[in-house]
Length: 192
Image (spheres, rainbow, N blue to C red):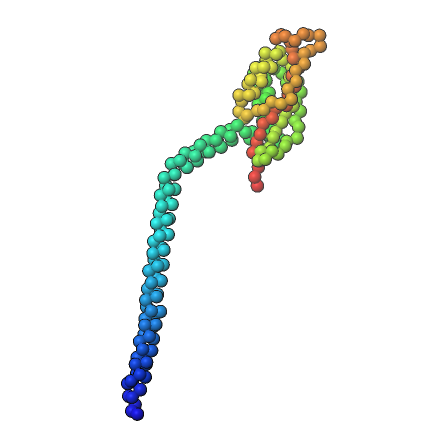
């Protein structure tokens, strides 16, 4: 047997098939499969980019509506802020509130006869500042005061309203009333 005899005959063909199979194996896993993986990865990347583009187009189409909503929210917040009491503390807010109520009363010809300041309460994100006031005035003056309170800013709420005529007087428009009520207004809770 010669040194080249193993390359001939069935052994040689078997060896050639093994070498060819090894070449195909190396070509597939060394070049073709990585190229296919890269191709599929790029294809998925393009699909993802198209999805992102479609999403951004939808967001852009909704932008005018969202800007309108934001403008309305800003306007509501500004309105809400103008309808609330200001003041760094509850005491300062209560003093400003009392000045406002006294101004409304004196502007309508009513006179406050008693003022009590109940403790402030926290209601969600707001501090409820209340004043229990009593006044002495005619019925039309009290009604005018209540109408004025309802239209004022900061927004004032009226609760526990009681009327009494002076002893010996009959209820009428000329009757001098003793009116007692709980007035409340809100201020934002200080965050911090």
